[in-house]
Length: 308
Image (cartoon, rainbow, N blue to C red; front, top):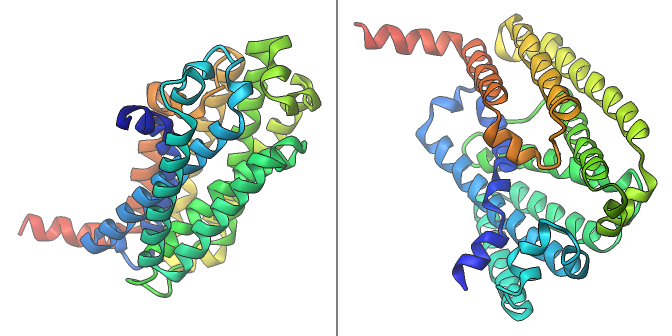
């Protein structure tokens, strides 16, 4: 029973929770060099893995009949019969309670964000996933809640920590972009069966989604650029060099669009993140350049100490 439950938690999807570490990387207090901060961030990451995993089990229970018609989803433990409904419900309750307890231990802010995340996904599973546009907005807000939860995980160590509103908006735009690309590829790959597998797809078309993804990619890039050059960011980090990370972000968007339109993949964003090497290199380079730019003074001091 353990293996089917673990599979139902979608460990490959846990890459989405890596966004919790943004607060740690972008902390002007140099928390990225703190062992305690990393332990708190890892605890937050693990907690959201459990929380998001319980949401996946909830979705499997809600979509059981439709998943049995899907060429890939029918192989999941619950639709295939490897995991019984009773076992799935028991696992959902236990994992959810443990995750919420861990959330409470981290901080009040983290707990409130975790509760909001679960309640929103509850509304999504039974109602909002059937409402056009709101379905992808719910997915995107889930990413914003994850990013903000990264702040909540570090609150006990640094009460003044926060994420810029520009970064929150760009995260929202990026997440909506990825969600719509996923919708696009579902329509593209499954054609007439797509609506049977996900009813909301009847309200979307490839042309409509392509327009929206172009708008959202542009907005995400613009808001991130505004973040890097805003007086608030320059004052916070004491540098105006963060703008040099923008070309890397631009490449990331263009690479993803290439994978979608030329390679015709994108139905599973997490799988792309785990398999496309150029995109992986792009993310790593962005993180390294951002961290080295933000924390250049601290890094210089550490390097000097090593060579003394």
